[in-house]
Length: 314
Image 1 (spheres, helix red, strand yellow):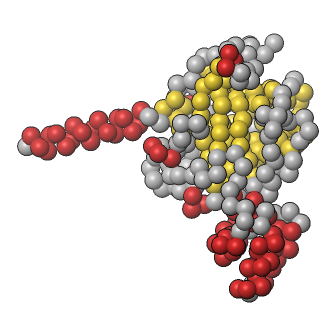
Image 2: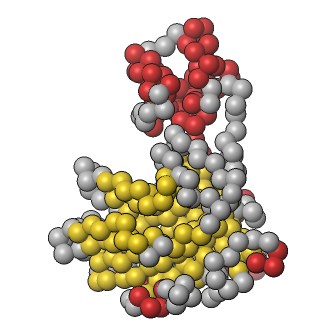
Image 3: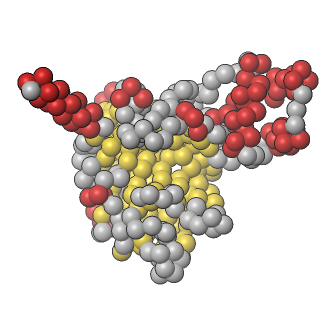
């Protein structure tokens, strides 16, 4: 009986430790309006360098106050979620994100103001055809409805609500991205009906004004950090000559030839096709790692009132 009790106690302590290590409490200097933020990956998968609160006095860029949030993703930074049902490694993804996916942070209906400031270092590299995602408005038990990502040489907002309702709008051009802070302000009404809206301002300029349904599920929540998709697309693109040699020695299918044609022109092609092409030819590759992605966030705020999310940016 004592042995069983000891096992139960240890199990309880382990669960609480495991749960606690996923929770991040950000200083009010950097964020507000969120009850609980959790790491996108747990345990050994979430590296110490993945997310850090850094200081202005140490030479890090800060938008307001004395601190900011630094994210970094290096080649191979993939893992599983807390429940173990999803694996980034198996799905061609890498990430270090924070998620406001707890019940107290869900946005169900009505209007919200959300803001964040984002900074790309001077030596920032665009890694297209890999897609770098820096923010998601995700649905509980559903797909994202709006994403903030870098794809074809720009920082853009992408509307992904509905299977055929895709829209991408450039917010910051590639030349303007590095070495400066960009203030993002979102005013959203979460609704399954036509009365919904999603507006985006960049540095006080309205850049995107969508009217219509903004969700398909009940709850929406915010995630931010660095989330890279299509890792094999980047590696395939950097090894075009090696793929050609691979095809000569191993042969190629019509689907592989079509993907190679698009790859040569830096065009998008199927996700599964990209993984299969990588698995087939990776032993020939000379370029085997993706450069690191570093980005800073500050003034990450959520409220029903506009003045509360922009109070430090005036």
